[in-house]
Length: 183
Image (cartoon, rainbow, N blue to C red):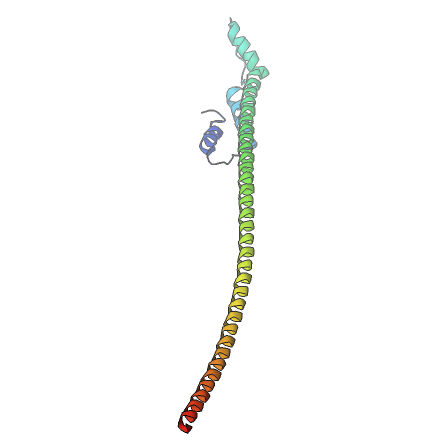
């Protein structure tokens, strides 16, 4: 298991969750220091060989100079930089998705606003139409009341005329009766 496998496992599990793990650089340094002590053996005593092989002397020189540890640190730093780069790429992708989602929501909200404006206009037109109908109905009721008053007035006049005709008929009848009785 490498130094950043812990972070990679967390990153792979957390990709769907939307959270990013923070890198603890102190732990990274501690792991570097612990790897330095294990990879770079400190010479406790000098050993002399009668015929030292060339490879062992070059590795001893490399170990003594610390190039191997530096290369190991460089490799680990490159891994860390790659990991941070991947995290940055993931953050950019998430930001891009958020921007797209916000733009989509903005378009949806604008469309809803337009629909609501049209609905509001329709409601206003219907209210205006209802007010006109109410005014017409009021006018028709007034006209109906006027017609009713005219009908009642004409009925009263007809009743008076009928009464006058009945009185005149009664007078004519009594006049006829009185003429026939006198003749």
